[in-house]
Length: 287
Image 1: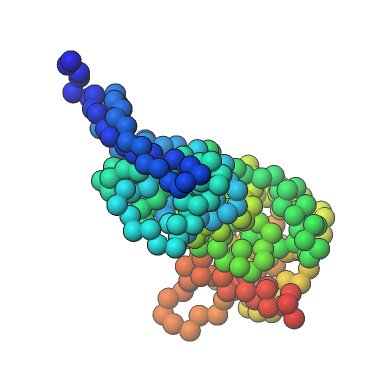
Image 2: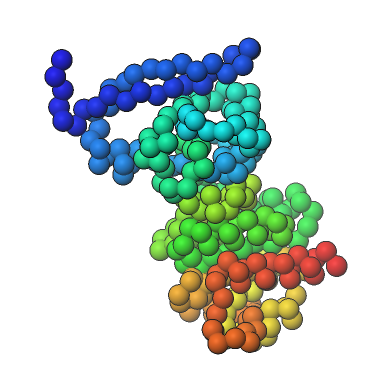
């Protein structure tokens, strides 16, 4: 039987969870997508990398299926991934390394990809409710125009470690929850709530109405970051990689703090800056 040039046959294996263990079933299916389409848009959203996928499973996130390389060495992390997926009834497909890399958005999948629904964002009120239930003063991180997914992921990881109650990001001209951001967060974005809002300034005004202190981080700050008080309800605002905090957001901040610099460079990476300020907040709150 003849078929068009864009039509190909691909084999794949499926790991099935059975009472006696994991059974591999190999099937053949026909794909009518062009090679370009497969490479550019295989899946809408993915979680990639062993740690990130494992944290997704631990967090109970909705996962459509897992795709794993068929010759992977089953170390402790992959064993836990297979076990958790089997317990949750999640299908696992085994494919070649080449096919897995073709489906990868980050190209750093470590042999496993989780196919997931669209990222779930929360309302600012959800973050406030989380802080109330925690019994501690609210601590949020607002990102004003961060565009690098690795910065978003790294900030989320530090925010989780420092006990922040969530991230607030803008809908436009900023990165959202992507496969690269989730991987860079080492799975922290599966635990840290993210609110995506249409207008940062309106959100700041709402937070200030309920007594939240808004502290912006900028090289031209009024005081050093260690001199600010983070013990009450606080929003820490981190600006974009190139331009910093936008003018209107800066004007809406209650206080602008800076990080002292002794070298020849005038600024730090956004995620490093966020980490320093978050751990100062953590130090003050623990004390």
